[in-house]
Image (cartoon, rainbow, N blue to C red):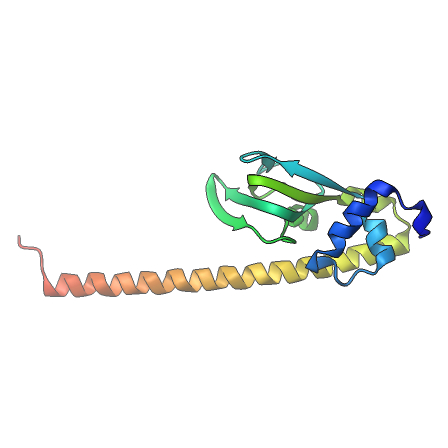
Length: 176
């Protein structure tokens, strides 16, 4: 892409995208093409970014601030690192949003409208999808590992409590 034809407002987005670890495998031309479909969005504290059950093709990359992720009203995660991704599951499986995401404090996100990728030439579109799916595979793998650790910790705590409960029942029986 000719640098002179690249819109000035997208230069900021390009600089932001270059700073995100998830885009480290993208070359400058690929990032320039991708940022044409991105917008920088700002959210105030408590502002909903999207709601559980909505259909949407947007993917969010946290730039600054933090977001709380809720499922059925229960907080399941807080994302605080620049480059954290959210909203990708709906794009991958074509189902409605599985959670509600709310800004915590002043929050900025790079937002990619993935439905725009369909307008790219086939080879370019396939390359972008391949790279994005590789990125999402990494993100989902990290989340699965963290979830597995949380599950293991919860099971250990359950076993510890069962043991304590049995021990208390044997050492201090309840009188009738």
